[in-house]
Length: 302
Image (cartoon, rainbow, N blue to C red):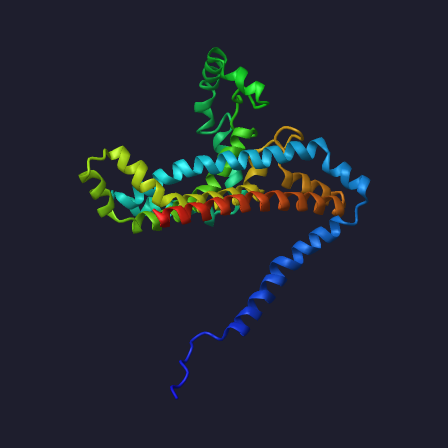
């Protein structure tokens, strides 16, 4: 009888037990406690919390800015990853190392730094002061401002980047960019150059080769990076709180609203808001993961 093959790792039963225990202590039990504490509210109190106009406004700001930041990060992150993978230039390693800077910086430091840079007297804020009236005039003349107002969106750019939604968006882009770049880099490195050469030999232009060959192969990685960037932006607090004026109904994020309830010892109300954010985030991530699964199956079939 052949001897059993010696395994380096323990068997399924032991590893599964450790996995379930770890997930229970770190994820399942805390989340269950969140919903349990929220359940202490009466139905009228719960309905009042759900229909609070400040909550609805903060959810729009939180998820709206996070979505826009994740979309912009896909664009800028793709360009950055493409440059780092396909080209070698002086200072390549320095630029590659700077990509991870948002991971290393405390979020509060990021927020304070960005607020200082983009204030009216900051290095970058001074450049914005003479530009914003021109942009507002262009939006007004072209009718874009009216269209934005019809969609209940801000129809003018602020006079100051810091302490506005524009500054909050920059902060979310800053902390989310590394997720896109680090997700796309391995996918770009594994991309077979012979496929591009074959497309060009068959008469495809550079744009056709890029759009019909490269992009479809990178869709799963793009969606993964988008999901990570979006999730990071939704849960961000430190950097956003320092570059926002935290005005209720205008630029207040839901995390700040939760902190205010905790300061007032309203733990049930705070956990209720946390549960609402958790449910919305979970539904959006399920939708993104479903799209990613479909894109992966489609790319394998092709």
